[in-house]
Length: 505
Image 1: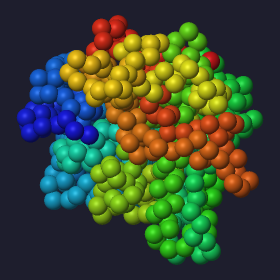
Image 2: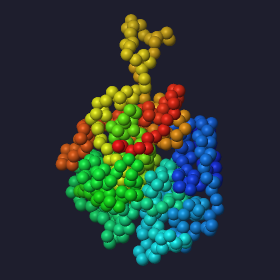
Image 3: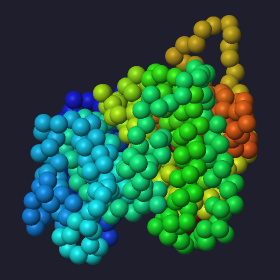
Image 4: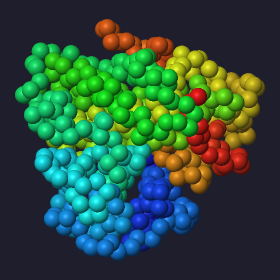
């Protein structure tokens, strides 16, 4: 997208450096995340000027200062201070040093995906004892906290900023390991882990067919229809329970569904190129599925608003933006940048599956609502955002066919493109998440916006959502317009509003 300039890049780097040197990963004792750099990267990519970048950064003046940790982090004591926010600066220094002579991909392979940084057999863990060893569980920590450590690391990889990657890994290290039910130790034990999740190599995959596969969204339909995942089965009510409360029951069910989803995608693959192409389809399904959960389910539960713009499910869209960068080969990730060379196939697959499982549990905590696809695409209330407003609504422009237009002619009446209007208000709105979700939706529209209705109708037995024949590439611009309507077209003088937090009930 055009917009960034040399001057804005220079301003961005100065502000990122200031945050790195002065601010903690959390802005309060409850572990709420520092979003300053996320906000800066998003508005920079959308074309923010140096002045706007500074103004954006100033809105984050409430950050907690970084303080010196009680002791440095070393290889010997790495696991002793995991989950302890007092050691953020020590972990930041440790990862910063590592990244001086290692790539971001090498850092992820070693610290996030290796067995030794996830599960150490025989380790004596003393819960609650200061300075005791902890199971590292680094992938678990990366996807904890509504996937904020993942988002932080991914911004650094996308924009090529090692300091941001170091911050993200340090934030990951001081996070609690919140979700063992979907990231069990068995994933990192070669004797017990499912082939699709840990030790997959292309030689393990049967060689039968080169038939291309499309997303079916059958996984997402099963989440909606499983009697074991209903609100009553999980005890989900407005305000209760939270993510950690439903994980023990829902987690193993979700994990089984994810295993089946992955096995279905990788069935009958022949060769490396075919495997990579299947992985591209899997990423496409997760991005579309999470956007449907946010946009269409939110619209269906809108009440008197344009959309129920759920704060928590919104994160499943802003984080999905980085799946092409981290999961796909460079040639398939375009127009997104990607790690090159990429992570191993097995680790990219594990990341995607773990992300999908995390997304599904978060969706269940918000009420697992209906997904009214046909109604969404048939509704004038969503079609209204396919263009910018007409200059003269309801009027037909009279055309003089006897002469060509000149400087005195009237402008065209039809609405112009939708996205410039969306970008303008998302840049000026001071909520740091709005520009992030708009940037994500605009990227998805650039990549898949020309998908026609009917494209995702399944040919085989795996049926997707009801109304799937209506799903098309306008999903992203319709959702973007609805979100702006809910949060405020501030560039047009409208009131600034905020996200919904009551769930889909």
